[in-house]
Length: 91
Image 1 (cartoon, helix red, strand yellow):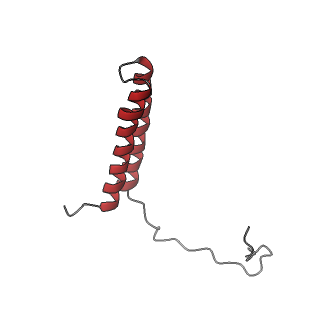
Image 2 (cartoon, helix red, strand yellow):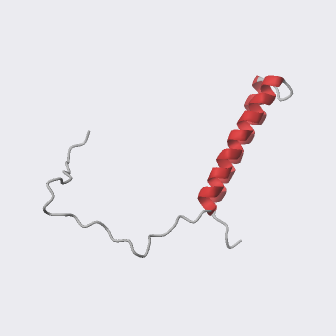
Image 3 (cartoon, one colour):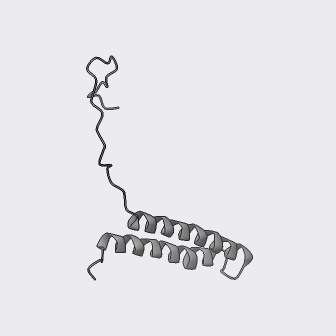
């Protein structure tokens, strides 16, 4: 229970709810899960859902990396003629 994360649980529950409601409510009502178009839609939607869950798992469990120890930020050159102009105009 020490590694439980409430935001991850909420997102996972949302993904599961959207998947099951789409497959068992909408696709089942529109085509029927036993028909050829219904089965094709379920397979395609399930493949997309698996890819989304896989990408979410990678985003959660992959180390984001670190700043290299020899990193030096760029020092602005005062002799350069190119400077960023900041404006206070909202578009």
